[in-house]
Length: 134
Length: 134
Length: 134
Length: 134
Image 1 (cartoon, rainbow over the protein chains, first blue to last red):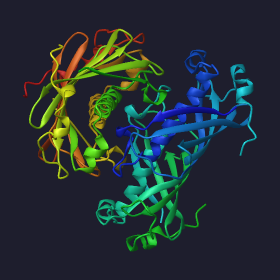
Image 2 (tube, chains in turn purple, yellow, red, orange):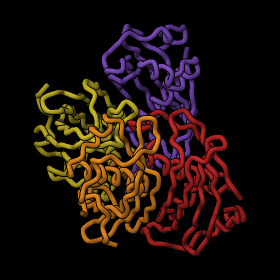
Image 3 (cartoon, helix red, strand yellow):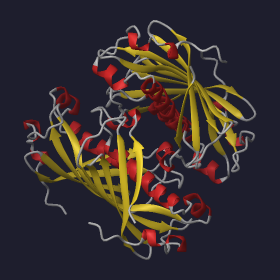
Image 4 (cartoon, one colour):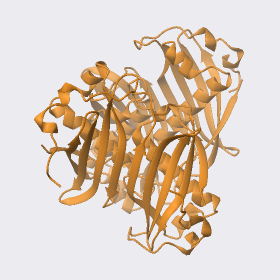
């Protein structure tokens, strides 16, 4: 499954070049992953209450285009790999048909002590099975 | 040359886990690169006034340890590769002797129209020549 | 005119208490003011290109309720006072019927040198005339 | 007691005007209040572990001067009023001798359920008694 979510960039996310700052894209990616879970529906907050959390352990992101404020972006998210403790997502950001950025993000599942734990059963859903799409 | 700079993490940089949010690390890395230039000394603001800017085109970052607020971090930055338009930095973040995160960041030089341009002569300094260090 | 806009709070806007950090509310208020202009429609970006900008010179904000991530908020914005150089907005943030925060925000109009200038004619619209509503 | 702390503004805190964004000042003020506690020394993290937290319930801030990145600021913080549950701080931000911003910030003490509670005994220190200074 390829999950899509949209957002509009905001003025306060721009840096002194008038472009969305590189760190803000990581916020967008987090937003899209949480929306993915919510839409399955898997409640991130519910998992948190059960003592299960997710931390990012790796991000590789290529910035292709500069984007200003007030622009509509779409973020496509899908699973590349699913392991015992980790899920690797691919996340592409588009403005219309143009690829703005592409990222690979690794999430590790942790317990309340911050230790890695097995991905909860809630995530054993077809929607989170790895996609063949490049 | 390996440039080192230090900073202390702040309360408002923590997320709901009480840890520095993954996007904030990109701010820290930007801070360290700017400090590197400033210490050479190359004035980032001066370059901006000449119409020369830098944009991040790629970041790969591995998060190794979780960090809370009020913690002292050191960021080591050195050049991995220097090309016509791009500089690739290696940036390691340490807390004491522990490696917190390691990143590879590509900066491209742009003009005021946002087009890639040759790295300015100001950056032709021994301190920015690629280091052999792994 | 009372302008209303909605947004959903995001995970990365939460602090270590799991609540939206106080500084983030100022981002929300900025977002709502820009939406107000856009909806009139007055293009903020267009004004910027003409060399006209707005800076916040004063904010008073009362925080009434704590809000977590994934919550839907509505922001009502209206003009309290309009002067030569300044516009004073009232901005109330609601979650359902509950008042989350109320703010008074003063915007001053500036030119490209950052000097105060008279509010542009574009803002002489009935929608921006002061409301009597308390 | 008037507590002073210093910080240098950073590139990523600037907005598209090249100035520190208005919301960032609230981060600076939070940083200065935490430093004040730390220097007494009152450990904010220790209080948190005891289930005592602080939330901002009100901020009034006047922005006097625009500030760019790489500028050294000093923040003076002192107590204006101390009540059962609340402390009202005055916080002035200076660049050299110039007043950049002045703020009044109300902190309320809360327990782990987010309910207002009496200010802990740790804060009954002469350094936090109200100052007469205007």
